[in-house]
Length: 183
Ligand code: IMP
Ligand code: MG
Image (cartoon, protein in one colour):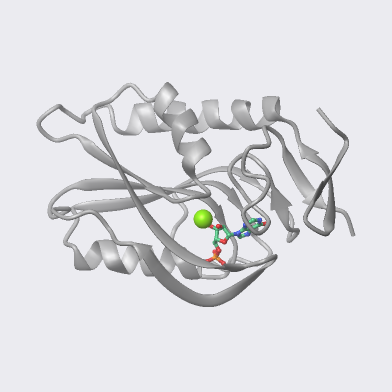
């Protein structure tokens, strides 16, 4: 693994090695397997992957989850470059027929929380039975919203990161480790 990488005009340095990320995912998956052990084929849990950033996290969770689930996806976006715009666009709408279902929202990272607040409202409006938030990362110094983050794999400081699904203007998603902007 490289110590430094360049994407577009910026340099990033190694921050969280893949092995650490996978260990944190193991712990989250163990909690999910315990909490959703009552799911059945007739009443599977909806794993709602938020595109594109959460793809790798969702895949890693899928490999570890042992209860019945249905994989769905949606896409909301708020980021341009390295800053949240605070304005949320729906690029791929929520799946239909969520009424009465238990949903686990799989997010890559909660930053300002604008995205997760909108998503929770949309799920409530769709009359889900329950919606939990399962995010790989959170920036606690930034996140001040009241939506509960039920499952958090790792907390990070208020820095811009890439890798393991996260991008800088679409580049860097395919990097196995997490890198932080070198300022
Ligand atoms: P929020 O709405 O401000 O919580 O932003 C959430 C979304 O912004 C995440 O799902 C990411 O797609 C993106 N995002 C937030 N922080 C970062 C970062 O450090 N690197 C890359 N993308 C980020
Ligand atoms: Mg995202």
